[in-house]
Length: 115
Length: 113
Image (tube, rainbow over all chains, first blue to last red; front, side):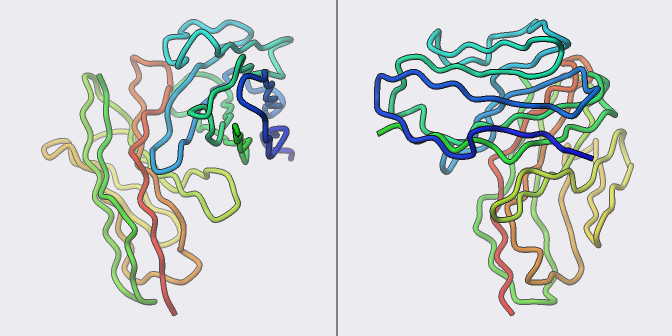
């Protein structure tokens, strides 16, 4: 079946512009997670959704970052007034639920380059 | 808070060599432990997991044993192949943190023919 789909796969934007990154989780998965993978660093947790709710937004790096999820399905991560340090691969993952034995399925990511 | 530390790469090995990638963790609760792999140009994939102390996760010839006494989850493979070249991430999931994964920094493995 279809896996987690992210779009665009690559995005180049000018400093100061806003960008939207999209994630289509696996159908029926209630939990959705956003991570950031910066060059030379590990994966940094950003935010997760259970259904349409995001109980913990503390992982978002700044108030320029926001995320929403509608209909318990598609999620959008928005970065306003992008900065060069925002350049990274943004990964989305979904799981059937939030139980620890429910594996996360990752998308291929969106590579964001801010020039 | 929870954290995962793994050996820095790159690790370069010849085909059929023995592989060990060290991973240690710090957690307040009783985490589940994972190894994820990222092949070139692909997304992260779950390689193996262990959910309690002394459990051994295994897949594709890779193994890792959950050692609570040393807070470790080292990844091993007896004979690596060129196709194993990838970045390997150790991670933990704390049941008190709702399946949120905390990752190590990743270790790049390069296997030469």
